[in-house]
Image (cartoon, rainbow, N blue to C red; front, side, top):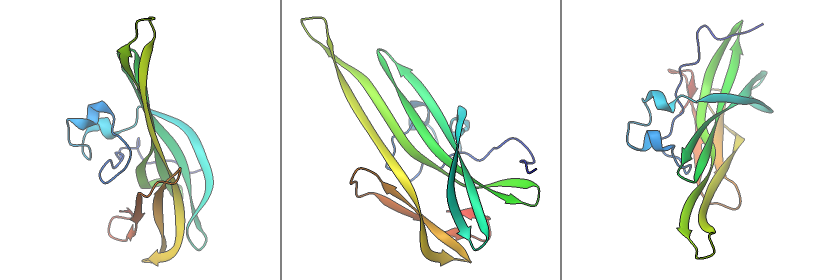
Amino acid sequence: MARTESPVSTPTDWYDTNIDLPVSLDARDAGNSLDAMPMNWSRFDLAAYQLRTGEYAFGVRAGWSEGYAGDGADFEALYLFVIDDKTLHVVFAEPMAFDKMLAGEWHKDGTRSHDVSDAANALTVLPSMTDGYHDLQLREKAGGKWRRTFKWSAEQQRYH
């Protein structure tokens, strides 16, 4: 059985993303803040992320929630882990989705308008490789044009 050597301390990388940030990260250094650590670990993502021949990663979805006057938002990140002997290592930690509902103007009939926004990405394992590992690409879902490619860093032993 594999495990991490200590609690996961790899923050989600909120730089260069199409995903809105939680409010707590907007006013701070989103890459180094403790707020970049997820509030919760929500579920396993058991897609077959083949990083190189014979080596697969498994995913864990992580999340944040925040409440606003009248509404709120949810944010999700994907953490990929590899098993090295009996130790788990984080090799990828990126935002994947958000959905927000913000309260708007009140109407004469007592109802209220709401502004809804969202975005979601899918992770693709590319055939191209760097240092023997497949490159990964985040792509915006729903016909979006945003993309970002991640390459393996042999020095850091993770994707950047």
